[in-house]
Structures are given as C-alpha cells and as structure tokens.
Image (cartoon, rainbow, N blue to C red; front, top):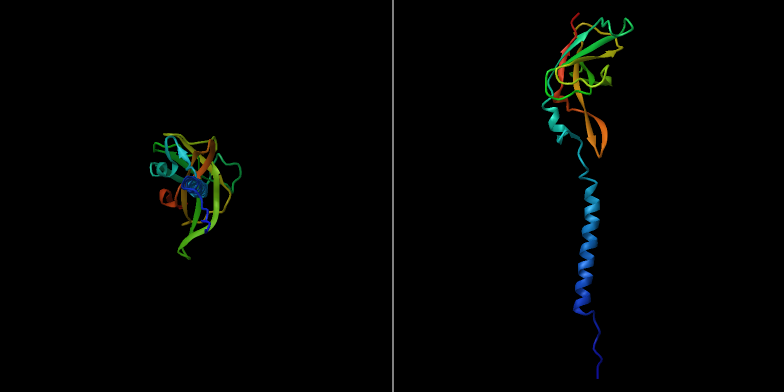
Amino acid sequence: MIKGKKGVSPVVATVLLIVIVIVLATIIFIWARGFLSESATKGDRVVESSCEDVNFEVQIAPTASQCISESNWAIDINNIGNVPIYGIKVLKYDDSMGSIDSLVLADQTFVGGTVTVGKSSYVCITNTLSSGDKFRIIPKLLAEKESTKIAYTCPEKDGQTIVYTP
C-alpha cells in the first residue's frame, strides 16, 4: 500500500493566504505613505491653492527712512488680497542671460510680522541698485503641516516683477 502525501489542509491554506495578503497590503501602505505625505494647509485648504488668491502691490523704496543704513533700500508691500502674506522671496532678473539670477537677495519675513489683509509692511535689503534692475517678488505664506507652522514659498507664477527706476 502506498502512503499518500500529506498536504496542507484547505483551512490552513486559506488562513495562510489571508495572512500573506494582509502583510503585503500593510507593506505597500507603509511604503506609499511616504509618497502621500500630509500637505501643508492654510486655513482649511491646501496652501498651494491659497497662493492663487494672494494679491499685493509692490514698490521699491531706494532711500527707505525705515531702514537704518543709507545703502539699504526697502521693498514695500501692500496686501490688497484676502490672504495674509508672511514674507517674500526676491529674485533678481539678469537680462543679459535672459533668465533669473539664481542668487536670492532676500528670503525673509516683514518688519512687524505677517502683512494681513489691507495692511502694508516692508523688507530692508542691503544690495546696490542700478537703474533698470528687475526683481521678481514671490510671496510666502504661513501654513501648517502636521501641527507645525511652516513658511511656504508660493510658485514663481504667483509673484510680481518690478523694475527699479530712480
């Protein structure tokens, strides 16, 4: 008489398959969670969509009385939109190269803090100005990410370009 091969019972095989599927699903979930991290929010919206609602007027004040040194100049911001502006990023255009200078002249908050709706403030800059210098002013918003406040720099398309004319 030939002894039959013993295999795994159908109940044990089913339980093993279910455990394997659960383990694989857990591994995939943990791996994918790194790609789907929590987005920064401004109020009840994703901060990126708040950047589209930022509206401001900007001007260069070459002899800013509020800035201490004579070599300082200021960028004045008037918030005419409905989103508070936390700070700005300032990029200088280089017309000879046809692109934006990669050096950031300013990446800071305003004197006195966030510029709320209908208010104005300024940022002091210590660089030499020449007639015709072009600058791209990009707003920064204060957002929350995982219960921590972060400064979010809006995309360049949401900024404004200004030209210094003495």
